[in-house]
Length: 99
Image (cartoon, rainbow, N blue to C red):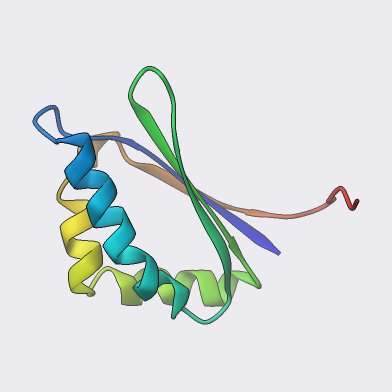
């Protein structure tokens, strides 16, 4: 399993409610991406945001990254993000806790 981490801040003029609505509208398009297991949107008190995506494999993650950037819902979502603050990385799951 691959874990994709994307960290960023929003533009100062971005309204939280509008950003969250854009995120919600993007979810169906994310769900349609082959290999996506789940997606989380997390916020830190200092205004940093974190997206955590779990993928079946790296190939599907990278293919989806190229495709989703062209989707209207994703374009709207991205407009809220302060692009210079964006960092992303892929990690391979080495060990996982099982209940």
